[in-house]
Length: 154
Image 1 (cartoon, rainbow, N blue to C red):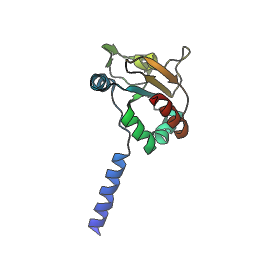
Image 2: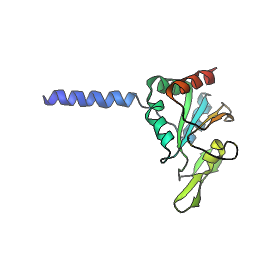
Image 3: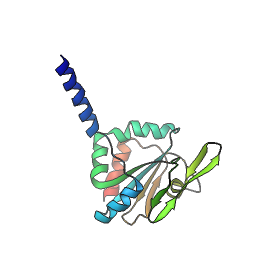
Image 4: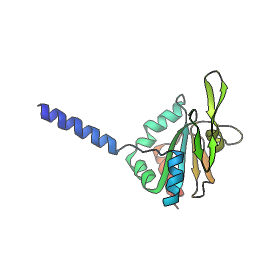
């Protein structure tokens, strides 16, 4: 009985481990672009955004989406309220407080601002030269995200 429990536990851990989307850091992507050029998809979110959390719980848990993101793109899961300095494209971006225990990261503003404002969640796609080629600031279902990935792959 004990062996059966351990087998089930181990199977569950390994199978869920393979189903998770691995997000990269901006620094990792800078290095990886030197080896293999790919488009970068940046998911900009916050902990308090309900639509961001829904996308994480549904869209980014879809096995087909995980496989496409992992094989064809570099994916960055970026919290807009990240407090650490980030170096990307030889430039250092910092967290900017905007009030009492609130603020936003400069890089989130740089990549996620659409029509002079940032609304979460934001998908920002960069080409192989790290230029913004697409921005979208609404919830995307699994179906819509799959269609977007197909268009971006072309």
